[in-house]
Length: 421
Ligand SMILES: [Zn+2]
Image 1 (cartoon, protein in one colour):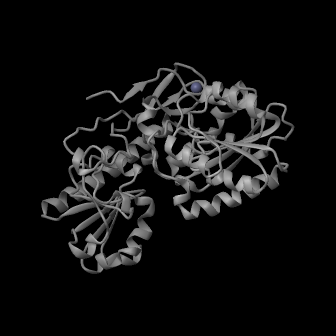
Image 2 (image 1 turned 30 degrees about the vertical axis):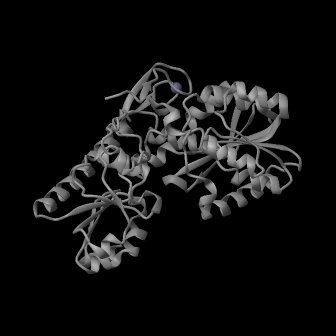
Image 3 (image 1 turned 120 degrees about the horizontal axis):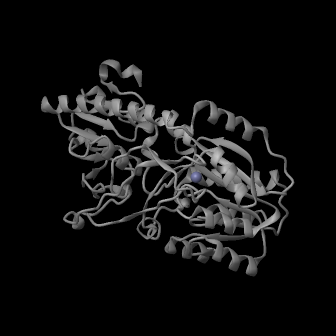
């Protein structure tokens, strides 16, 4: 196996070497590395995905870091390709400017700015805007379309250059950075340097307690390196002269939080939600090993139930396939050992049709197969979307097909219990 990852030996937030394995997850290939037919002879290496926790600050993290050049430089997903996100960004920009009373002409910087969709709304509100994004092609397109974007990784060195050229920022936004970046300390040092004295830094990350409670362990994949919670953040920001003063829960990616940060003497009072979430984390033992041992046990039980059902159906000669070809599906297929149990994958994203899944190379086909040449059983691997997928393909059940929903609890749906959808 060729090496695609390196292992760090200290906590990404506090630097401690006191790290414990809390949730073993089976190694998998890069979750989004779908390949064309011409690459089927090339073996795609697997990288470890185990979740560790820092015994000192409580931060949950992957220590095996896949070379970011393999993950982000060739990134092709552009924000503006998604209509729902555009409406969300427009409202976001207006709300933030109103709430923090940001004056026209203020500098707003977005880290991981993609094609500049969010910054464009800030620009429309009269702000000076600057993007930073390592996906070269997308960054260059954004610049051409009028949103100047530096095609690089943000760090404390780049921060200094931006500061000398543009001055301090009233607002820094980073919605896809804190979950994905390895060098969070240096990035945060850069943010602290660049933020104006009364400036605000806003970020979004998935929330560790939701990952446990909502069973979304499959959102653990190599692009994500950190699974954040409030307690480690409070200490981390403090060590950089910053203060987490507000948090909101948001629904994206199975449960996320939006954090608001200012300089230590930024002047805004800390909202009661911070203390409230700290007590909940403490009561739940979120930074202890017990909650994760229990979680690992529950995951194992669900895996065994699913495999028993699938193996029985296959022994009866049934054709079993998967529905969903997203990044979460790669984690789920490898962790649940489904890679040799499914004939192919169905997905609604046209760009994936004709490609093959990472590592195990299952073909990806459109859902029309359910009418044209239906299998007997469809395991809904994109289980968070089980309801709309089953609604959309009800006729498959009418004709005698079976849907299996693996999580949060195993459900087998046939035309007899179709009402359970
Ligand atoms: Zn730590």
